[in-house]
Length: 300
Image 1 (cartoon, rainbow, N blue to C red):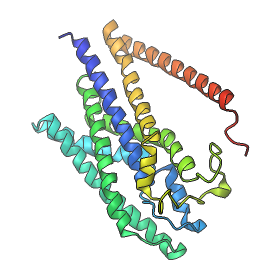
Image 2 (cartoon, one colour; image 1 turned 90 degrees about the vertical axis):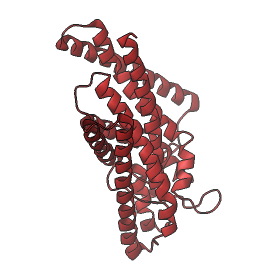
Image 3 (cartoon, rainbow, N blue to C red; image 1 turned 90 degrees about the horizontal axis):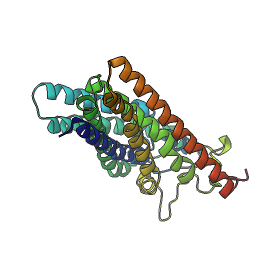
Image 4 (cartoon, one colour; image 1 turned 180 degrees about the vertical axis):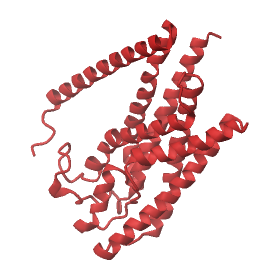
């Protein structure tokens, strides 16, 4: 089979795995109230809003997912070098990262809520821990495992010169940043603040004044994840998937054109600049179209 076709197939599979990883990562952060929405959940009790959200952020998503995926990548890399089959090594690495993820989530939730219970009367709901921990660890495992697949393909078939743990670290930081910038928009300002006009952001005076009641009963992280699975999660997955997929075309075209390493690198950079320019232009066109068609986002 033509080696170029194998590389194209690996790139397509890598982009597909990254798409699933991005979606799972965003939904996991929605269940656990991490990153941008986390600050609003954390301020809730201070504003008199006693809630049943899981509140687990030890840090922002880029740092935490950089840790989880790097740990998984290091374990998988070591096992592969010891002779273990690649699929089993990736599963074991993702499993260990999921265990670490769960331990951090529980300790973070208990630490944050206990601190708020003394000063603001926020109870520690153990049923929230038990009901939310499974989706947090499960979604986290899927996200890390899919990123390991993409990182392994990048190092074994797509010509990435760096070792698996380093590529995994970069992918973890990237998906965390995309989850914060793309996915959280559909969770923080649109889900936790539904009583305020859409698109107005969260003014400082309203921070912490989150919605604590759902359509039926008291709102929690599971409800937020269900809401975000319709838009925020898929958009995060699409963004990360396109980032990985389009980012690999520079190297592929460089390999097709041929030449020494410097020539290939220059071609990859030029292709990358072209792709970024086109996507930035399309983004601007869509934004202008939306503003003209739907008018101002809010009158505030």
